Image (cartoon, rainbow, N blue to C red; front, side):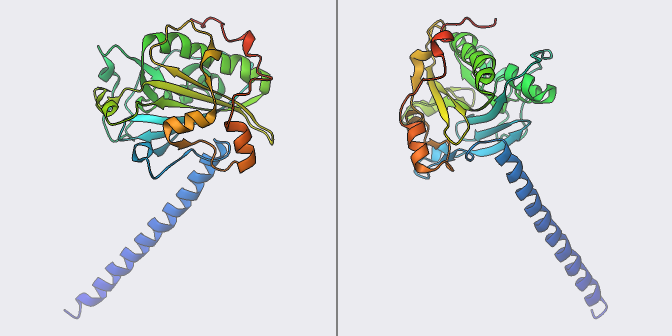
Length: 283
């Protein structure tokens, strides 16, 4: 028994050293990860109210893109990325959709088969590919970046908006912060409207911000039942309205007076919307 004591002490000491290493390494990883995340967003990662448990999400980081993933709704509640004007707009072939191992549920491309819904990208394939490269493009095909969209929305109106953002707004303003995601029906009934495990949204939002000391922004909410040829400016809303419908606070670090000016009303001056609202889609 006496001979066993030194051995036990060594085991306890080794365990203590291992635990200390894990704690230190985890802390360093956390601070490094937080630093990387903060460089991908403007004025903080979207926050949610504790009064709305369905808005709870956890952050998944991809190349150039942050995803606020909900294991309850099995959807990205928000996807945030920055875009800049690009000279070379060539991209590679479309990758295949892939399951994201980081999600709690095993969502695959096959879950959408026969549902009547498209696999709708939140961070767009084209814009992310020309901005961040091939690997980033592949990551837009992770199912954690996908939400059910009706074909008239996904293939027409939503795609037209995505193209205007990267081709016109980014070229005009230089740098943009974009946040986009689904909006779900109020009440518990919508929770049971699902494609497999994935809850079906009733609409989608996109917020486009020109970051600066005097920022400007546009916000859109597009319902699922669009035809696809409607003018983009028909769907303009305030950021406050998007926050009310999602339970999210998109720019939690923005000073109060600036936040109020940016979010409380729709201001279209300088965006030249009349020139782009009816542009046809690329495809």
